[in-house]
Length: 416
Ligand code: AMP
Ligand code: GLY
Image (cartoon, rainbow, N blue to C red; front, side, top):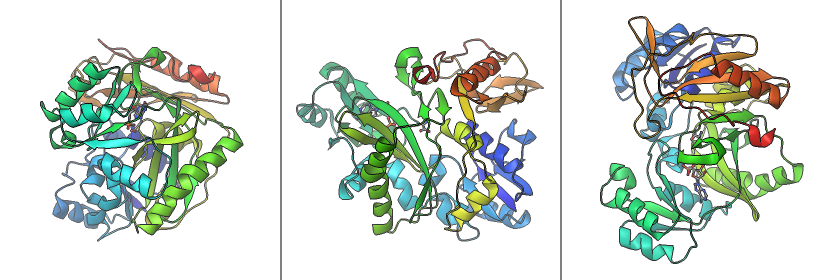
């Protein structure tokens, strides 16, 4: 099979790495790709919104099926366009609203009794402050639309809430993505990334992982797209049953009832509270950097898995007896204003039997690798235990440096 992958971050680098060793895959093509992915796949500098060019590419390279990595093309309806020609691993534009509109996803959760926090939809600073009277601090304000993981404000008091609401509604920092927002009850607990593969009718759970969303150690600093992940996480059987009953089954029921064309990965971000699991968000794709850890934990041919899902089937999943850790190496200024073009010191393709790198936001300038985004490189470590995987990920991470590099030093620590 020839596969066409959309996207160019660390998640897509992990997907492509797996497709490259899939017995069922002959060629891996990427739109747009980047300098680092050119070493892994056949990159095409085509705009995914240019449907005619994408169709041309599909025909010219005899593409069997497509995999869409990031949320934006899914929200833009790319899967619906591609599905006119080939099977696609990725949900329809309608289903993608589970991520692209937080209000849509909350309505869905309420309609199908998926356990989640109480909320109000707000559109002005005044409405936000009035709704806050129903909650205790800290207050959680979330932009409705896609905001690259930066649209959530956790506010200690009403002053902070007012400032955040002004950012959305007065200064419009996220444009129309922030013209509507949710004010949500704060959920105290620990977070779990529960990612499933689904054909819209049934599902297979992937190995559980835990992301580290805050920029700094001890969960301090601003929220990011994710600074590191470890897996698999083992949870109590009783807790898993509760998650399935209160969250996964009602979610699947909703997909079926509302006839969502859902073929792909569904990421369910959970907060495990005193009162049980509560959905923080749906993402209609693999998490980044969760995918970097989950994909190598699965002992199947990923080309075959994704193709079957794209066809609406549901393959069995076998888990390897392995542990994987991922440490994100981020640029100076991430998440607010990442500094690009900074030379990376060290061999960015160094690889051993227990560690390797995935490029997430790099570029090559006259033979030199430089930073080209917020999350620059992922350092992966593999081990037969969690501590060993974490140790190997940090040993890998230590092989690179650059001016202003940011990384957490406590990935997986709370589990060790
Ligand atoms: P989201 O983009 O919705 O995943 O939110 C980003 C992060 O904000 C989550 O991973 C949580 O750490 C935090 N968060 C979101 N909603 C809540 C909530 N209701 N209570 C506490 N923390 C939250
Ligand atoms: N790591 C969380 C996300 O992909 O949104």
